[in-house]
Image (cartoon, rainbow, N blue to C red; front, side, top):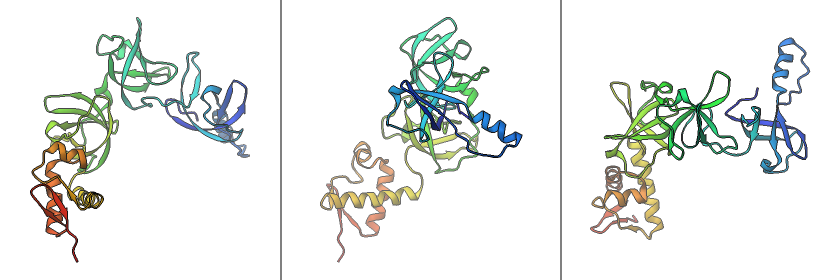
Amino acid sequence: MLMLGQYNRLTVLDDTSQGLYLGYRDDSTNDSEEDIDHRERRAEKVFLPKAEVLESPQVGDKIEVFLYIDSEDRIAATTKTPLACLGEFAWLKIVDVSSVGAFLDWGLPKDLFLPYAEQKFTPEVGRRVLVRVYLDNSNRLAASTRIDTFLDEDGSQFKSGQEVQLTIADSTELGYKAIVNNSHWGILYSSELFQSIRKGQKITGYIRKVRDDKKLDLSLTRIGFGQVEELAEKIVATLEKNDGFIMITDKSPPETIYALFKVSKKVYKKAIGVLYKQQKISIEKSGIRLVHNE
């Protein structure tokens, strides 16, 4: 069945001068009522304009496309990459406003509709807004700014140290709110940030802690001793590439440490402490040096 608002791997059914017709080809010979209905549903076809055909596929080949509703209210295929799929969040730019809603640029030929009922503000052309892509009651793709209705603050299903995907939302007095795996709210504290981030940025993060109130504290670096071990290996590799010496110590500014190793100063100090105890490095006034044990 064609999946609107998502990527579909479809078969080339027909090649015309205007473009390709794509769909699912079911070669089953089972004539049960259930399978006949199944084949009928999978027999739907969508059109991919010639200008968007990236290679030279033959009839029978499979290609991956994104499905959306075009300006003529038909399901259409595109090889372009949307800024968000169904169920995902993104900061999108308002490109037009009408009496019934606003229209957002989401990277596809037809703009994404933001209905008036799904607006929490007065839209202005040029403004960027955080939205979720959803299917409305007419089974059409649309956007909503009512973010809280789609997210859960009970993060008890997560575990400390778990890798997650984040979408950066608004800044707060404590740091930044972030959407975790398109399903939960979490927070990145300013004291834990050692790199610049921006609204709408999609980035890999980690669960720092599931609090007693079941809300999520986040981090952009790995949690626990595994992070220290991984960093220690990276430090040794960096030393080997730089003639056994780098001018970064446990006294170096946090920004300098993060620029090279993408970790906090606290984690860096732990890692070089481990290497020092293992007698793999010596710590000098101006840097650390790789020790070559005979």
